[in-house]
Image (cartoon, rainbow, N blue to C red; front, side):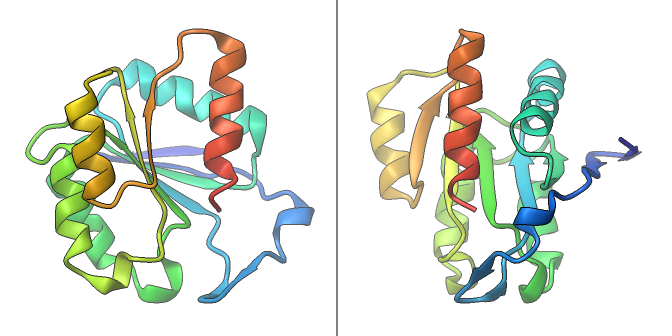
Length: 158
């Protein structure tokens, strides 16, 4: 699987499964792109492995900085927007909650599911993120079985 590191953006190309190439949404053909905000290299590597094992049809773009993630999202044409955003709560410059609030101001992103992926079990964070537009707030599981189930659940949003 080729991987290209361009500074703060890591592109991972995964060969699509044939059964996923015909997915449609109300916005035209479904994107097979998932944009992930994750500033921990070990978690990034784990997510690449998990997504590849669960459903290799998705292209993953990792950003390790909240502001750069938002800037990158703004640069993507409408017909190539990701089918899912997965945001770590704690990231440099903009955290997951701040990203959600910024994206909520632009109707262009209303149809994209947004998941907070975090180690924090703080109920106040959870409540604020859900109010800011997150579809879910997931505390990172510690068991391998739970990790696979969580990735399957996240992929179901696409």
